[in-house]
Picture 1 (tube, one colour):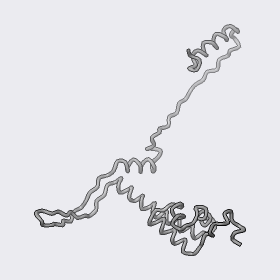
Picture 2: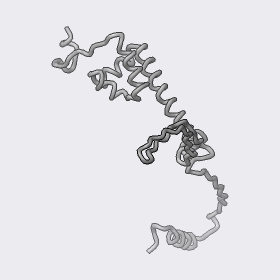
Picture 3: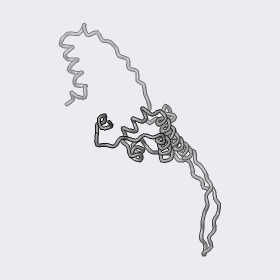
Picture 4: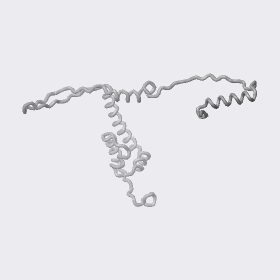
Length: 168
């Protein structure tokens, strides 16, 4: 029955089980895996992942929650880099064969790159590389009916010479 309804009759049917949603959540949240990577780990095609997202609401919810969890973790890390942060650490030294372990506080200054990235994405209107300018042009209507044919031809000739594509 399976072979009659598939495009690739030699392929194995994608196996769905209720554990797939949990697996997708953990792959996305812990590994930061993309749909392509999840498909490879689950040994199914990308189309199968897309199909499950459309037909298995619990799979889509789990996958999106997992991705959001990892995105929020990255966002917190980026914010820490932008603002600077400190954390406890240890310093291990060896002086004349005597090993000393000292508790220290490690400090990381703010990162200019992280600040710029954060602001360009969160405050686009103020921090975008492109600044918008507005120009107003006043055009004056000229009544050409009062000019002779020779005068009009002369004006056209002068105007054409002023255009960049007609310069010699």
